[in-house]
Amino acid sequence: MAGGFTLLVAAPVLSVVACTLLGLGGGACLVLALTFQSQRAGSSGEAAALAGMAQSIGYLVAAAGPSSSASCTTPRTAGPLPSPSWPSSASPQPSPGTVRDGIAT
Image (cartoon, rainbow, N blue to C red):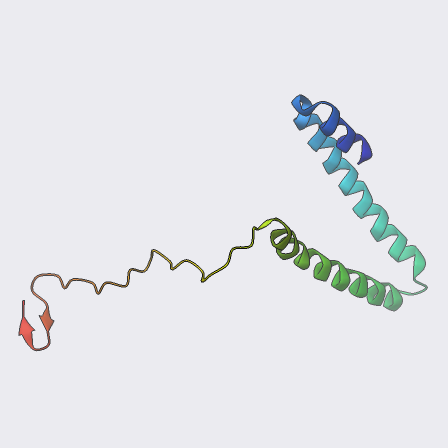
């Protein structure tokens, strides 16, 4: 993975090659992590418990990533949030031939 990051910083023109190296490195890290979990456990029950614990913590960390990165990069502004442009606050116009308040239009 370090080679992919280095190539991406040193030669941005080769971004496809750098991203390929990053993907291969990430896949290799995943395989190693799963292998280390199964080697650490003494039985299949322990392996399942260890994998469940590691995946739970991993998903919690991964779920916190987008919101924490957004809070670091979003500029803070004072005042109320902008109102949405849809749905409009204007009431929809009835189509011809409909009944509204007992009167046919």
